[in-house]
Length: 363
Ligand SMILES: Cc1ncc(COP(=O)(O)O)c(C=O)c1O
Image (cartoon, rainbow, N blue to C red; front, side, top):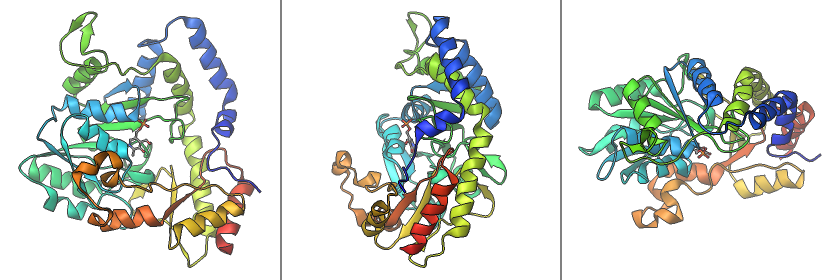
């Protein structure tokens, strides 16, 4: 049997009629940028997550860049970021001229809150927790540290739509929560899109200007902005996705339960999940001793997998001048060399899930 890592086509087919009608509505409307669909999506998504304001932008990366820019984080400032993350979290810091200060991962493959305080200096302005794989970071501890040291918290929720910590959704803890709607994400557009959520009216107004050439009135550019606007088509398609976000979640949760309950192989470690969280099950990360061999074994049996992520951001070629080596962050390095993500997405057929369980158990 062949098992794709993810099939966006199958997900699209779950709600095909609604997607097609929404797309046609926009094509026929003659209004494509900053219009009524975006306003509706912003209202609906802010309400869904539980924040006052949502500002739609071009991507999750832009959401991070603009969030930090709106907060005035720039040259000479330090932002604490997880060593085990996707590079976009770091791009948000670097594009503002600030310096990322890496902190190692914990047993849950997340920013290790216990190690944050020793990384704080007089230049630290913010902590950027990333709810990797869809599991919330230890937000209780992170918010306590931020309060104690007077630091801002900007959450990277690119993988954690609808995940919650102590019953509170990710993206509602820090001053801002940044979301990606890249097509494979738990809420995905059919192209690039992202958003920033906040309760702070002043920040929301700044962000609306920043995404639109720094302007609130045409040709009056009050601040130095860029062009990062979510288009009407993506907003309309995201409104369909948002309508079905719970159904999609239950479909992924069902797959995760089958993996959790069915995989019994001492060579494979299942993900550890904290008791007080709701996981979004965006990804299903296993830890194995021989990553390449395991991946290849699954491939030989027709199953595609991915590694999140084989090169941690502190080792990215483009950041070579920072001078880090893999061993600088022991746990993040270990994850990069031992993690393998199994297929999980809304629309994955049950027989494929059970086949994956059987093949992993036969390894
Ligand atoms: C943790 C994390 N942050 C940020 C991003 C960036 O989002 P985008 O691809 O929409 O720019 C991603 C995308 O994969 C991500 O996984």
